[in-house]
Structures are given as structure tokens and as C-alpha cells.
Length: 299
Ligand SMILES: Nc1nc2c(ncn2[C@@H]2O[C@H](COP(=O)(O)OP(=O)(O)O)[C@@H](O)[C@H]2O)c(=O)[nH]1
Ligand SMILES: [Mg+2]
Ligand SMILES: [Zn+2]
Image (cartoon, rainbow, N blue to C red; front, top):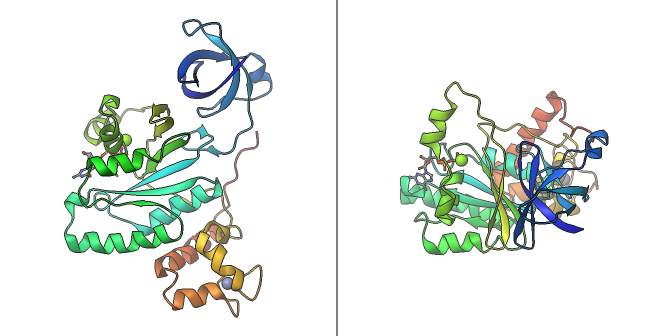
């Protein structure tokens, strides 16, 4: 018996990486009866005689977390790709991504693309916003010049011993950046996939690629993002700076809205908490009060 991690799923087969080798496996028949579907990212116990014949997955180890779109398990970190333009830079969308990652206990990193298409002035404004995110715990990669060897190295340096996904809006530049990290990947970028998508349903499955002693997955991305995995009550806990500063609120259960002696509101007024973080929080809260929260399907 060996242990490994599923890096690819295709028509009933699962490719499992174990000690830098890849084994093709199938799920044992009783998984279906137990209503268990192996996911890319799953750590598994498997047996395989050789790399050329297919082996069997015997057991799926407990998942640390599970992303829904795309379906992938055990993610340690997500690089949120945000573009300066096309699509327009949006702190509202960035906050949506980050609160989703917080709910899954995934470390968020933020990577700014398309800086070659903006003025110095615009760049400075975006950079200043992103510096705030760095301060509250999200490492920022915002190169003034795109794809320098230094920035590629810096992002690759975060990969070892981790499962990383690239996420973000469609067209932000996820696949382009991954192609710069490893040109052999040759991932399809916008122009090509746009023409493929026209009138045709493309089923995109995720695959984890071994890169710099870690596993990295490209994802199709989103055109828009609701607020997943959270209720109007738990939203407040998805903000690292609210968690910290909120300890000084008069009420332990303070939601930082109407309550007296709220340290978070005071910090917003004092400019210590970024205004847009708080405004977006209030907006998401209102959205969540209107819609039914999305719960994960029970397994
Ligand atoms: N000018 C410029 N274009 C970029 C940059 N990154 C990506 N693009 C372009 O943006 C489009 C979408 O990129 P793609 O990687 O397919 O985005 P994805 O949907 O996030 O994977 C493509 O035409 C890329 O060539 C960048 O840093 N600068
Ligand atoms: Mg892409
Ligand atoms: Zn408060």
C-alpha cells in the first residue's frame, strides 16, 4: 500500500502522484456504494503494481477543504489573479474571492496583471490599495513590469510542499501567467478559449501540475461571483483585520454595524481599516440577508 495525491481525473481513472512518480488508478467499486467520489487533490491510499498498469484507490483520507468551482480538495493556497484593466480592477470582487478563501481556510495571495496597460498614476493607486491587503495578511505580487524573471521566481517560491490553485476572473491572465512560469504547459489563453466556447459546451476539468516541488492548478475562473459558504452572521469572521481589531469592541458578538463602542467602526473612521473593505462588508451583508445562504451539499 502506498499514499499519494490525485492530480488528474479522466473518464474513470485517477492519476496519483506519489514520491514524484505518477500512477494510474481506479476507484474501488465500493466507493460508489459509499457515495464517495474521489476528487482531484485528495490524499489517498492506493495499491499499484507498476506505473504502467492501473492500480486501485483503497481509501480517501480526510479532506482539509474542498472547493466547489472547480471541484478540488486540500488546497493550501490560492493565487487570486486580478487584472488592472480588461476586466477592470475591482476591490469588491477581490473581497468576494478572499472571503470565500477564508471560509475554506485557504491562504490567499494576490497577483496583479496587465500593469503594462496602465499609467504610472493608475498603477500607484492600485498598488496603494493592495499594500493594505498585504498588511492584513495577503501577500501581494504587483510587478510594474509584467513577467520579469524576479516576479516569476517570487511566485514559484511559494509553491514547494503545497497545493496551489490559480483563481480569479475569466480573462484576468491566470493561464498566461502559468505559461510564463512553465512554457511547456502551453495552456490555452483567451483568444483560443473564446473561440472554443462559442456555442459549445466545454467541460473543463482541473488538473494539478507538479511545479517547483508543489502542485499547481489552473482554474477556468468566474465571470462573476456570488458570496459562497457564508451567512450574514459568519461573514464578519472572514475579515482578518475585523477579527483582530474587533476584539476591542464592547460586545464580543459585535457585527460592527449599529453597535455602540465598536472598535472596527472607529478604525474605519480613523483610516486604519480601508473604507472599501468596510463598505463592501456592509454590501455583502445586505446581499446575504436577501438571499438564502449556500451550504455545501452533505456527503
Ligand atoms: N497586456 C497584457 N495582456 C495580458 C497580461 N496577462 C494576460 N494578458 C492577456 O489577457 C488575455 C486573457 O488571458 P488568460 O491568461 O487567457 O486569462 P485567464 O482567463 O485568467 O486564464 C489574453 O489575451 C492574454 O494575452 C498582461 O500582463 N499584460
Ligand atoms: Mg485560463
Ligand atoms: Zn464592532
